[in-house]
Amino acid sequence: MARSDGGSYFRRSSLFWMVVVTGFLSFYTWTVFWPQDVPYGLLGPLGALAKYFVDYHYPVMYYGWFMTWVIHLFEALFALKLCSDKGIDSTSARLMWVAQTFLFGLGSLGLLIKYKPDGRPKRQ
Image (cartoon, rainbow, N blue to C red; front, side, top):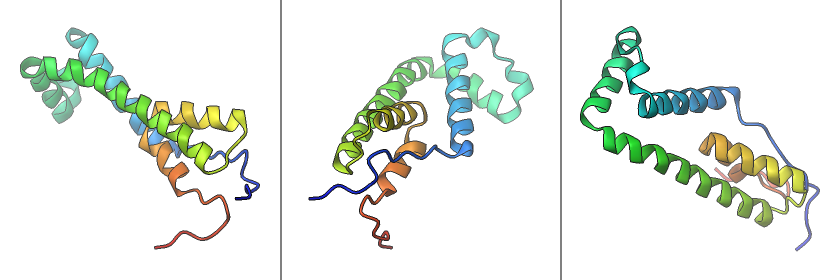
């Protein structure tokens, strides 16, 4: 099977997903590791929900935080496999896909999954 010219294919994830994932994971980290410093009253319904989870389901939040990063790690490893399967042979492109997928999860992985290396249009 001949490789396409997509050996260095990389697309940056959308700014929307970068902001959403970064904001969510930052807030989640803050509530898990420094729950006493979160201004719950100033955050409206989000603060009330976060306070409820911290007060009544903290162990789930704590272990869930670690599980979130394990899931992101497996997504990044899957992105590495997809790069091989799709003929992306540039080391820098592979590294960028793995790093971006580790940080932003499905917001990045979706772009790689949609990539068709031979240029055929995607079936609907």
